[in-house]
Image 1 (cartoon, protein in one colour):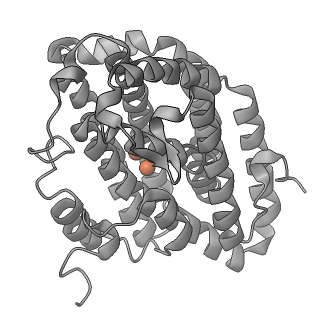
Image 2: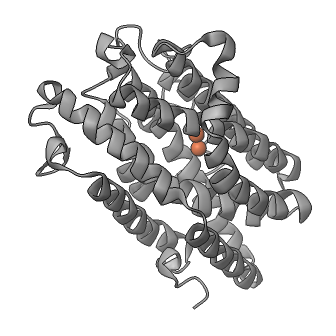
Length: 328
Ligand code: FE
Ligand code: FE
């Protein structure tokens, strides 16, 4: 196959690796993932039959997901918060296009901006599929997420804008997005895909599609930083400073309380629908029905650390930055 004729393996629905596996083991550069790649492998590849809603028309929304109760409430909180985060990400990424040092980076970030706008859209539209009113869904998300936005998203947004907009530091911005934001949140996205697949096939597919995009965002961002550090070793201290500030940021925002609240609702909903889940394993050897909210939170954290080890080593950076090693 010559470049761009068919869907790349890592972007095809049936052959793409899992998010954590792909993010740890694949190498993709901005030049690999240019506009032609995106149009061919993503728009006409990943998104074939799934462009409008993020899931295949055959992946249905089961009636039990539309019934009021803890399961629907848990998914609503998750998708509402994620939809808002994706909207903020889209707006933020505009500055990456403005500051892109060359055409490969410009094309890549233009596509990532569309990816995140699309994620915001399919998460939001799934709320409508769960029975939220289409006419008021945006205002309803704002209302539900007001506290989360103020206490979690606003500090992350301020931190990012300062670097990419106010300082015009493109590479610092790439570090913020790739390491501090997406690197930390990707494992939660992987967990979401696994959690919802047996309960809501449409939500499982929406999460899966976003995860395939995320592999590209994480690997391209890492390769941009890796080659920048090789060419400009003098940038390293500044990058470590940004990572240390990012570590401090995550130690201050109260994300855990929001996740645990959502997972407690999931726990109740899961018990009510245990028959659908059976022996389904959330990770090898562990049945989803046997897991607790705290365990699910902890495994996502553990995956974040494991992923960071591999990816930071690839970039030539300290792998333990999140647990306090960035400045060392
Ligand atoms: Fe996204
Ligand atoms: Fe992303």
